[in-house]
Image (cartoon, rainbow over all chains, first blue to last red; front, side, top):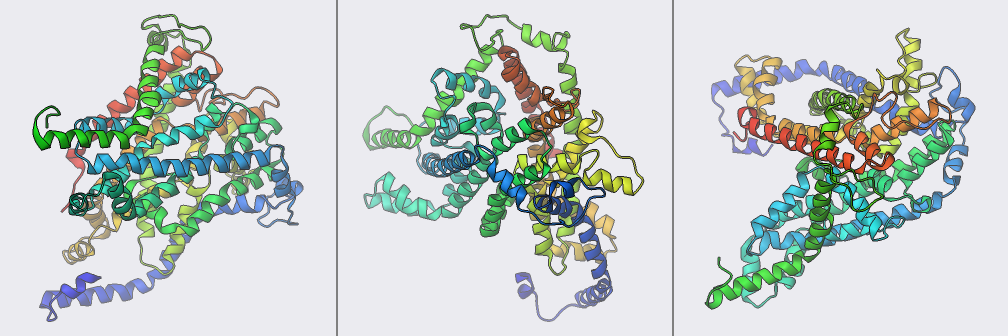
Length: 301
Length: 317
């Protein structure tokens, strides 16, 4: 778009021809507009229908859910499934645990990852490259090798049965965000911190007053994705939480269906719907931060 | 940069080192306690018959690794087969579907932002939620998918209760939730300069030729990125398969014990096998050996991909 301003005003003949050809193509494609929408809609359906099904199933009565053929509109609408889902024993515990674990992880990860990324990006010290190589190694290696002994370490120090295995490790930073924040901090001009240093500013003040305000977008990305990852996490709660009163929402619904079978489909779908609301709400409020995180660094959730 | 020495420079370097260590102290604790120590322990466990109960574990040398291949663990070949199947089908299907959808979402039509949101939303549904949804959608009797297939007089698979259809069922769920891959491809496609297409059209290149000679080469870095991420993730595929297999088998066997990786081992992915061995069978030593095999395979494959990238990944113009 900005490119057009760089073009000379008097077009050579071939360019004028090209412009005419493009205009012709555009006119021709006018008829293709309907076709484009048709293709987009056709391919969107397989993505929309399961999502739609999740929503309406949460409002159907059990008779309606199992009626054949399936109906595309609840008849009648019921709040009974939502009521059942919220009413399962332990639900309020799951909400509280999930909230605590998620908030703890978001705050701890943002603070610790920023503090840890700082010297890797802005202080020259002996051994920096070697230590940073360890950040990369922990980033790439699958978690399975460390997972099994970690379980026993937690067992030996009495952490199993508490929420600590899912919270305290966040205080030691997350390799991925250390890496991400380091890249951001390195892109800040060094003149800025050098002149502050000459003025007698300590490293801690430089970090807090100069660097942190400039990497706020990256900190927002860190907070957002830590939230999504922690909230979605099924794996770590499954392994480290063995007391039902400590379960998170994800683990709780799994146990619920495990114990009661797939019989109460309505409650199951209502629970799945409730579970999906926070990330989707967050998407609508923080769409740009989220899309930037995905496209720039391949973060998934 | 010597630490010992005379003058301002060395003083400054020692001061820098000390400051850096203050910043790094939380990380150093984590590195030692949550990474180096567990890594060392797991390497040790892999050569023992540790069960999680008696300490110290009994050293058995390479027996755990031998057990994988000499038939002591009858499930090992199954789990390798399941995992290879998954890598071979899930990675290319996600790449092809992701690229195709991204090309569609790169079209200039009214309301494209709305379409993009629609394709992206499913990836926001938490793992457990989408696993439950697909258990319901793919229910062999009352699920929407089989009802629709029946209406069309097509074959109705047993999905998660049929060993030969459980993995394809997971594949569908995987593609449904691939919105992030689509988004990464979309960002890659938007890097392609429009001028290139225009000049190619003038030279008489058709749409297939333009895709093959312009789009594809320019987005090879994106393909490479998605390929490496997808490969690493698919080798460690766990949560969805765990939830679906245990719930589907516990429901069908009516009160029977749920089978991790069921039915009949058809979704016994490598990570599920590690989990089962470590946390349900109590073969901690053997599970550690399995974890190291998985780690080594992932490292080797990543290195091969990184090495090969020079041949087919084009950076910059």
